[in-house]
Length: 362
Image 1 (tube, one colour):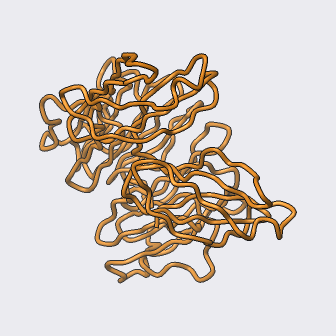
Image 2 (spheres, rainbow, N blue to C red):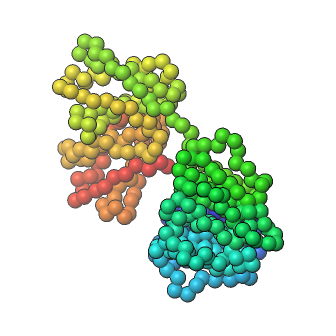
Image 3 (tube, helix red, strand yellow):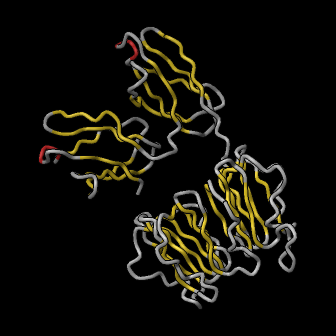
């Protein structure tokens, strides 16, 4: 699943890695009843009583309440690259950078400004709509715009003057959010939604009916190392954020790296000895924080068998999978990663003309 999950009135949608959709919550208009056979989905969005799914071929599927035509898909609609469901209206972004909208339109939320182009992202709110252009500016229309009368009229469609360098947008029921390239957030509309003071390092935003969310990237201190030669052995002194685990890697050409081991960092230098340093005329070293996906190192064919080193966070469990066509994969072993790489050998490798391998977290 991906973050953020679509924010709806009283139902939720989740997109699974296999391209299928799961829905739960209120179902009074069928909004939580996913159409049978729906697959190859790449994006989802939820309105108050309706749901949308974008398929990998650029077509759209809609279901749920259709009082305003929001669950009706325009005939021949194709080339869609992004979708956004408002309260009772829909927006789609097409591959040519233009926007199409339909559904409820009592505040002009489905009336796309004439000539709008070069759009990179869209968002649908309660009764307003947003578009992020490729130049980092935002266009808004619908309730709360300049001269807009009636309720809601909180200025959610009145983009702050000078707003630029925007990389993401989100729309709530009566407010709007913009994430800028410097990691800060701008909000406008109903004055209930004030950005917390000092909010920074934001990498994603989302808006619900009466709430705002920001995903913050915690700063990570880069580990450091110093070296000293003792006899014929090179001793590395490692330092970094206390408690973090770092992998020590070595290379003779700065292109191919081999993991030697791992250590838990401290605010005081931690020694690590490379007993093989005397075997090389020159050797380079680096520290890697293993917080992403595990990987394979040093694949080699020996004695009619394939051997490689699974590498990742020490103590973590990984599943080794194999395939002959990169389409169908089968688990062949489960390994617990150690402080130093432990070679894994596939005893069946000689039975295949070609065989591919990958590591997965269970």
